[in-house]
Length: 123
Image 1 (cartoon, rainbow, N blue to C red):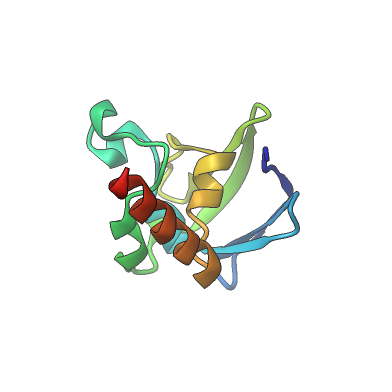
Image 2 (image 1 turned 90 degrees about the horizontal axis):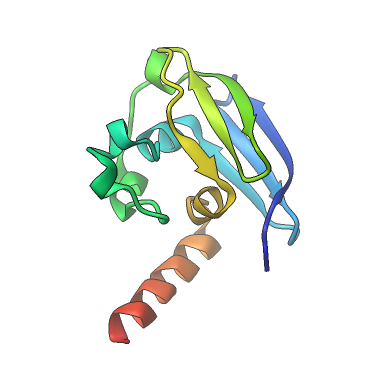
């Protein structure tokens, strides 16, 4: 299934972004998670460290409220993703739909990701 958002909203007061998906799922992303998981080469430490899935460690990173975690804008990037613009002017990461859905922090998505990782490691 080719999942795509049907809606994206930023709640700057709650510091979270909500995405509703074509399968009916709703993902709520804290801004600090989105910034910690920025997929750009600069944040990943070079092109060789960029992956289609977010690093599991990003779910344990707690970033303090700062210009780096204050979302200014969500910019559509073609039909495949969004670029997030942060108050510190960082706007290099393209969050494609696959990456963004894989980043969903809800318990059901985290469990599904862990199960998929276990199955992949057994193969």
